[in-house]
Image (tube, rainbow, N blue to C red; front, side, top):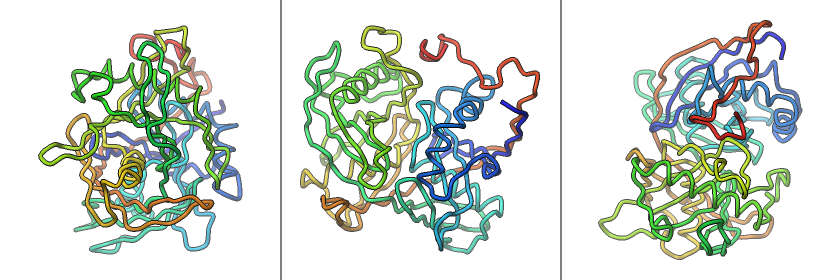
Amino acid sequence: MSAIALETVEVHAEGEPGRIVMNADALVRGDTMAAKFAYCRDNLDDVRRMLLREPRGYPGLCAVFVLDPVNPGSDFGIIVLEHGGFTPMSGSNTMCAVTAVLETGRIPVQEPVTELTIDTAVGVIRAKAHVSGGRVESVTVINVPAYVVELDRTLVVPEIGNVAADIVFGGQFFAQVRAADLGVELRPENGRELARLGALIKLAAQDQVAVAHPLNPEIDRVSLVMLHSGDPEPGRENRNTVIMTNGLLLADRPATWTGALDRSPCGTGTSARMAALHARGVLGVGEDFVHRSIIGSEFTGRLTGTTEIAGSPAVLPTVNGRAWVTGRASWTVDRTDLFPAGFTVGDIWSPELA
């Protein structure tokens, strides 16, 4: 890796940290967001690892490349960096990116609401930032259409057996499973076991379920697993945790069955969850869906309508949450650095990365 200096705004959305790279355009090539996404995946993995791994990162960290727009009328584009690779869309990271571009003045602020149009590899999305005194108080993400691939798909999961999973797209492909079906509660102290179960479910889903987004067929895998509290019931919180693995998952290597839990309620996951609930007939268009994370922070989702994507039914989700700037940094790699792409150690990382 050649000498590099990346200027970032550090932000968290309801607990989930995002490292927003403000000068990424010099790195990324392509005339469309799909081409830029493919370029990042094929050429910039060392940069992704440099930002997210030690000594600059840690397992729960995500990042975003903020890019110049490619579509007429758009304000900017985003590509999300996670430990599992580059991803086309993330609700919490979109909230972080919107907060960063407005509070740094990259995009002019209009009070009380600044409306933004954002290019992603799965289509154009919109966001509304609710602003007071120059401070972004919350962000509503008007996401790409979400749709159900299959409800109650039986997965044969190592060490667990048959598990019913909803396979849903909400900006990324999810396998969503009721935590009660696994005999575990959604509590922070159960984090290690939740991560293990999520990794096993992802292993099964990637092996047994074929998916491809109709507008960008290169998005072709179940990348995240959500464990949730089940269908809404009066008096019970809707809770979830999303497991983000950070290395290869191998069926014969139990040490690889691990990952980090999303600290936020997950924006794309909330979108996908609402799509599944709508398909089940328990969430209507226009109803608020308050979704809480493993640490108790919350997003409020809402379906604003229905549509079709490639001829199949889909819903139009919005997700509202808060984000806070926590700092600013310039991340550099010296030409003599022993670890230009970062490193990992098996005490807190998947051993396949160590």
